[in-house]
Length: 244
Image 1 (cartoon, rainbow, N blue to C red):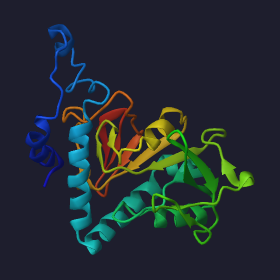
Image 2 (image 1 turned 120 degrees about the vertical axis):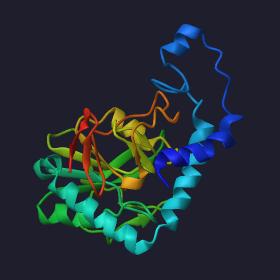
Image 3 (image 1 turned 180 degrees about the vertical axis):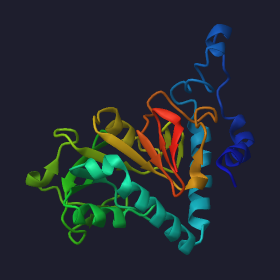
């Protein structure tokens, strides 16, 4: 099922939950609302919740060998991307369950002599990053995700030095770099203050033309600079500029 079709499936089920648009006609025409520039804060949440459930289910139902083949191609594209090649430090998530697999990217970064940092979830929807040289010393967080130990001398401050690239997860992305995340807001907070290059990982079936047009973009949502799928790499600064 194409992502746009999936949004259509859930559209009717959440329509009754969506707030009535009582804005002035000129504001509605300007596209500042549930469609267009972005939703009013919180207005997208029923649709987002429904889409997350559908996307998680579809992702988990995809055959593991098919996911593995796709993820290998995604990893090859990431490792060959100029931003990755030129980076000195890679801030990256450790994939969990049916997410796009990142362990081969992590290994490639180590082999190229790059520093690798994984995130720890902290208060106020924030992430703190710690450099790791192996995946053996990680502990499982309350979210069920493996995290690095919080050693002060191994903390990496994003953007504090040149050459930082961030690899970002998501349930869905669009060609403008917007993402539908898991709802915690951690990566939106991170991306809002990150001065380096950000790359979203996405299987082609979870990429669409515009999440905004589908009514799931809030004012706080932040874009990544590039989206990489098994078929292409898309620049959010120039969505029509696609590297095959």
